[in-house]
Image (cartoon, rainbow, N blue to C red; front, side, top):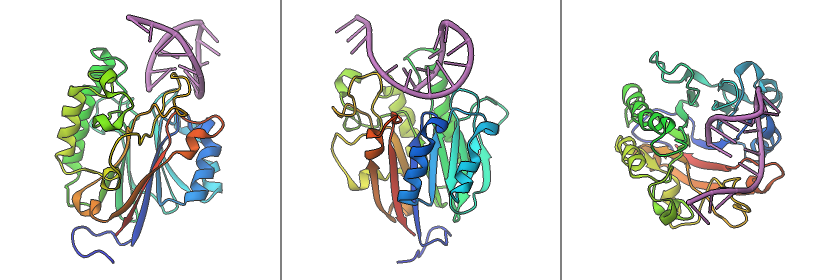
Length: 270
DNA sequence: ATGGTTGGCATCCAA
């Protein structure tokens, strides 16, 4: 069924994926293998941890992928990967503040805008980095309101660094009020979602135990499934209605030298 | 109550 109303995307289908690589240079073979196997229209990568001139652009291009990158030395860094050209790329907040913030990249693929974010972790409640996260979230909300409207063909994907509900982390009682599961984070996430974003994963799968991130610091966290669902794919209502699947691919978390996150992919029939 | 690991870079910070 091709699209009827609400938006203008011309591509009949769209597979969108997200992955926090925790160093694109270390994870390059995992990413290239995954791309070849799953052939998404777009992969959004976070924590590339590399300056733009050291990003392995040619490795992607040699495999037939376009890339758009926004990175810095050591930390953060986001990228978009696509078979089709990535158009109208924007990086960061573009408001003159926080020029070193490499946490946002947007681009248009097959006439759908992809917003890829690496939301700040926050480190410790009450810390300077926590305040940064608390300020970053509403600032991102302003970016969305200024540049988009809910009827646009736009998707928001990435490492959100917040578990939305107690079903989205392994020990909600222990983590209640902690980083990633704090009322102030939930209030700010709700403000963002009230714009019109819908969590595509929860259209298809309910309950606990479905995670995208398992900490390195907890021994055997993946084997014991002590994880968090903090990597999300959000769609406005008219695209959420056209989302036909959203799945977590746990397999790459079990590879040699894995990231601490794994891939999430959503399929839209437009 | 606290530790455990990984990546990048410089011997410690961020996650």
